[in-house]
Length: 192
Image (cartoon, rainbow, N blue to C red; front, side):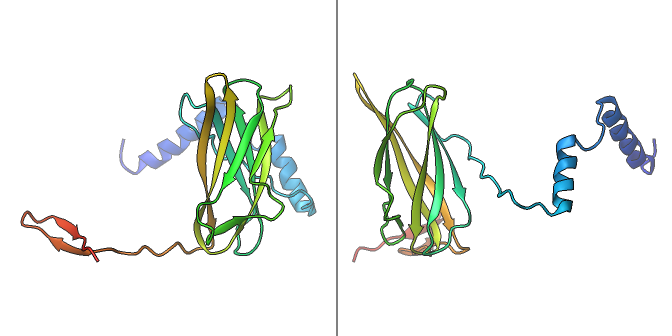
């Protein structure tokens, strides 16, 4: 087979594979979405999708989150949380902590701690949290999910990144860079 015939061969194999798999083209859902868009029906607002659950294996909780909208300095930002307990249906205590008060704060109507119980038909609880960014950069909301057991308190803590604007916090360099006798770059820190 010559080099000129390879693209033709690959294209025909791809088409043959699609026909063999029974691909009839766009699905009915895709056709309906295209028809709705053409008709100008933009009444539905986009649904946020939850990030993959955060938590290590064996942790008592798996926490998923979705940031709604675009975070802007001074405007409230909504974060939807989904907390799945691996310990069964027990009341969950959620705490919201912001370590840098110059970067972000909880909305005035947002409590810093709540206690939730999952409905009988679901294995998870959902909660909406509202924060207000004060500056641009990558900011973090720490979320702690805890449950009291006979053996003590079991908890999972995650940090949810909230990117505000394009800029990030400027890194402050400490010390000076030098090259040692082996040719490696090292940073020399000086006491003040």
